[in-house]
View 1 (spheres, rainbow, N blue to C red):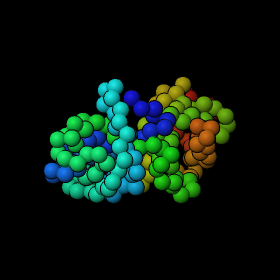
View 2 (cartoon, rainbow, N blue to C red):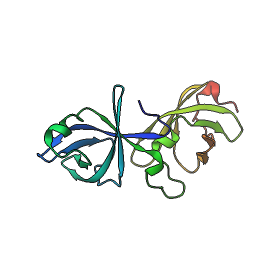
View 3 (cartoon, one colour):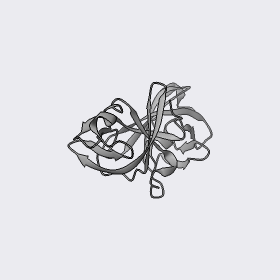
Length: 175
């Protein structure tokens, strides 16, 4: 398995397309054309690096052309592989925007220095994300709003929040 710190899981090869070796990748995210240059494939204990010649969205999947795979039979051997990209190769986001993988596992503390826990998952609600944080007071849902999230330090892996009334359980609301 590839390292979660260096590689980001972006999809899975679910089939082949046509007779020229194209593969269908079910994306774990948007189905837009991707700026991928290399894909890192992994299944069980097998890993493979593939250069991307081209890709395009098509009916909920991404059709990718991988160098060295020129026919349906050779491409068919890749079905079932998980698809990763190197995190160093993903596009930079604007200031104060983050990828979920950058936040998951991050320590969350209050502006008073109290440990709330660690972000275990992120819920997209449409209006704002909600961070699921597990820690000493149990599971807490933290809204990703500017009046709650005061600072995010990716390098230190730390988020500072301001506790609003009712955000923490009653017993854990003492700061």
